[in-house]
Length: 383
Image (cartoon, rainbow, N blue to C red; front, side, top):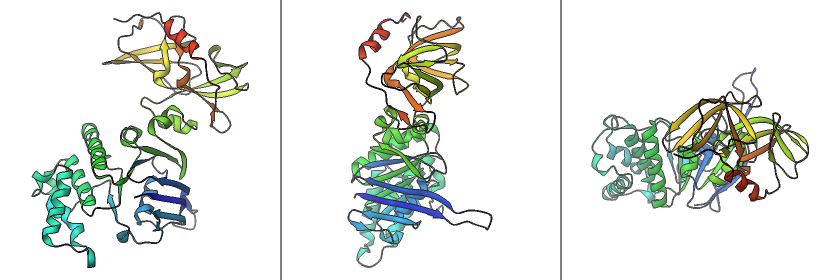
């Protein structure tokens, strides 16, 4: 089912005379395509959960419209919207078994939607099988792992066969290994069912790994929408560039003079078509090429070997962060006895942003010969 939000706004009134009203979501317009998994991504307080609750009907909109397909559901109560909602804290009934928890939404159906006991059990076991819990139906939540409890919550949301599945930070209470496993399960379930799914998270790695599209939010406003890799490769502003990526993007103060980019006193890249101006420079960790005669010199701090990759930790006077991290092939040789490390830069991994408004500054397409020449000039050897 397609979900359409048109100019949706949510304003919370002041709680006392000293406070002002708070705009949690501001003019949110977006269409969730039928059968896709969309990630609402942003820091705490950006309005992503409020947006989810307005879609579910648990929060009333202050302005704008919400459509499920062609139907206006803006003022429809939550129980009439046909959505499945999974909360961050699972919200399972501790005194009920897994089977009873899954059955609970079906037992509350009334009128033409009411099911027989046989039909309810069939639905419950179908949902349990989908999340691979059919062997645990008689257990209670306290006898389950965190990941299993999360799957019970998903099965309970799916058992009503909703048109839309809403997930509010469903992995935040799990440890790292369970998060990885459970997010893979969520993607599998979404693909098998084809249910339109909206997934709220502050973890960019989660959103990028399982979403068909991501919506990056800040202070209630959409910053950028697109396929995860497209947003990573082409951030529209400095906020998006800094929010996506692990390790995060390296940020420097720079200056464009005569079509060349300077970081400190060094000319590090040609940036054809960019007017002379001070800029903020973002360089992805994978955008550095170690080279003995590289254009950019950094002060070497440490080398961290991480299996197939290595992380070079360095500093630079023009860096906006305490340290710079570059990710290179683990086989590359770095002279750790040296006080400095020099790099050439991959042009497509370097972004320029305006000092005035932090918006991306477009750079004319570079001739790839420059990049290839830089790559061929590498002086380090591989073991």
